[in-house]
Amino acid sequence: MITLENVSKSYSTGAPALNNVSIQIDEGEFVFVVGDSGSGKSTFIRLLLRELLPTSGRIVVNGNDVARLKRRQIPKFRRNMGVVFQDFRLLKDRNVYENVAFAQRVIQVSNKEIKKNVPSMLSIVGLAGKYKAKPRQLSGGEQQRVALARALVNNPPILLADEPTGNLDPKNSWEIMKLLEEINEKGTTVVVVTHNREIVNAMKKRVVTMNKGVIVSDEKEGFYIDEN
Amino acid sequence: MRISTFFYTLKQGIVNIFRNKWYSLASLATITTCLLMFGVFYSVVMNFQYILKSAQEGVAVKVFFEDGISEDQILKIGDTILNREEVLKAEYVSATEAWEEFSEDYLGEYADGYTDNPLKDCANYKVYLKDVSKQQDLVAFVESIEGVREVVQSALTANMLSGVNKLVGYVSIGIILILLAVSTFLISNTVTIGISVRKEEISIMKYIGATDFFVRSPFVIEGIIIGAVGAAIPLGVMYVLYNKIIGFVIEKFNILSQLLKFLTVEQIFTTLIPVSLILGIGIGFIGSFITVRKHIRV
Image 1 (cartoon, rainbow over the protein chains, first blue to last red):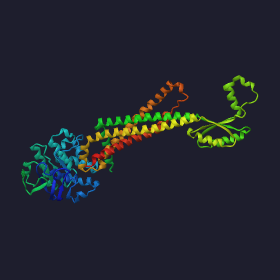
Image 2 (image 1 turned 180 degrees about the vertical axis):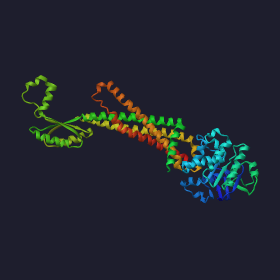
Image 3 (image 1 turned 45 degrees about the vertical axis):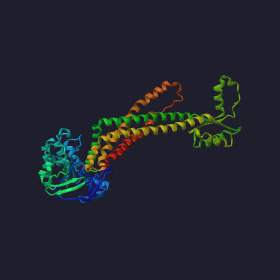
Image 4 (image 1 turned 180 degrees about the horizontal axis):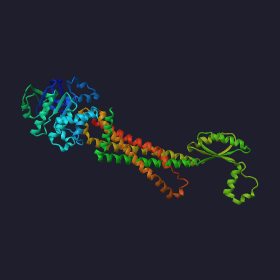
């Protein structure tokens, strides 16, 4: 499902953000990518999203060699991936319903289908009663649920979560993680970049540890390894 | 594109205008001001050229004929002159009419002392040109016609009018170009500020998998609507004020009423409406299209 072969990524200044990274993530897996700031985790996600191109090496996602995608093919490619960010990235001037419906409008789902799918997805994330609320009226945990609903409403085979609990208290963090686990159990491949040691250690999932752009460990039921 | 997507995009464009009302007002004010300046300048230039054209049309070349030439021959020569492209009209003044005009103007009752017509050889054609800059060509042509004795022209007036007309043309093109450049700069800046505020929104759309077209369309619709309204407002203002201003000028400069001939508001608006709308919509479209492009590469 996701393959990186000898991938390196250098920015114009400084040491490479990723250095000769190879990894295979299969369909239906749940993978934590952990590491300190500057370890290359965010670059990893941005490469998978085709926001960046690798300096060298090959990245294949869902059968697409990302470096070979033409500009006009990128939107369709991204529709196969749900993305959740640490800062939620909701459209602030639209309500919960419209934020989730937006993902469906992008792929030109009919209004009839949207009216069916969005409430159903909102009830999965536990926000059915708050569909009219604007993001500013919600707690951090609720905003992240909206972001999750938006990421999942199109049933993408892959979900990428970049520090999804970074701005949340422990209770909300656990609720979000539980939701991610449920989604994974339904067959979605989930890749979570995180700093949250407690969650990583408790969930006993595959853990890929990065340090200075290199994968230093890859354990099937791993733990958060402190590299410092 | 699905019909529902089309209406969604259209709705988003309209909603965006109200959602970002300060930015929309700033853009609208900029376009309105620029197009009002353009409209005012256009009207002034068009009227000035109209006045010049009227003045030019009043400049006549007088053609006199050799002694003994018959009236039929004169009329034939008149037809030849009338067939020239640069000629607007030609008025025949017979010897009798020339004498009547002269005696009326200068002799009054003393004219009764004359039994013969002293101006019997003064039958002439008054030839008016469409464009006085062609006067020399016409004079050369008429002088070469057999039977023509003399051609009287006012070269100084013709040259001056022609020169002023050219100067006004060049100056107006220059000022209109400067106005357009300033407008585009101001509008592009306003649009850039407005869209920069929504940079994050654009990047979210792109992460979700929106195509460039989907992201750009509401912004472009917004730009077009603001451009169209920004063009309509100055047109409305000008329509209301034009006749009042013309009336004021005619009243204040009554002494020049023979010279000051103005175009009607309808004549001005025949060109001004399409030009202003094209400019407003065009600036709105291009401004938003180009500026979104800067942020769309995510």
